[in-house]
Image (cartoon, rainbow, N blue to C red; front, side, top):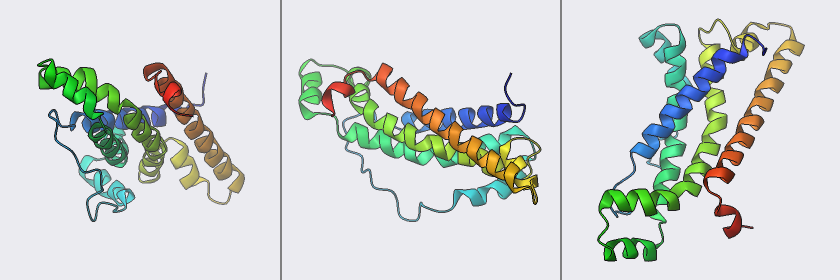
Length: 194
């Protein structure tokens, strides 16, 4: 059985990242409009400042931490999905129009599969942010998890360093899992890239 403090963070990181992925991909345009993939001005504010605000608004517990992870993961996933949709090959979009495919069918059969490589780029960028968001949530008012261990380590540098090494290993493992999922769900990408 795993370490008792790792389980809740995994739940927060996965829950927040899944919610961000759903929201990010759910905001994709259904039509053939081109979406600008540039980040809006002023967006790169420090999301970590949300932690105390979320803690005071939502109280203690899992909810503010999941919302923190969601807030940190939403933008990279949404940006990557929009960029992927804007890069749908024109020949495929024309083919769908020539075959009188509905917008929904075009989205489902042509645009989303063409955007999947970019979506996976966003997911892989969001995974470290999910871990960071979970740790920041644990630092502010957490009673468990590696962020709590780091915050309460005091002068025990070995304990804090061990927690940081575990976080790094967890991030690398999550990235490897995302790469494996990409290999399974987007098998054609191996043949188109070197």
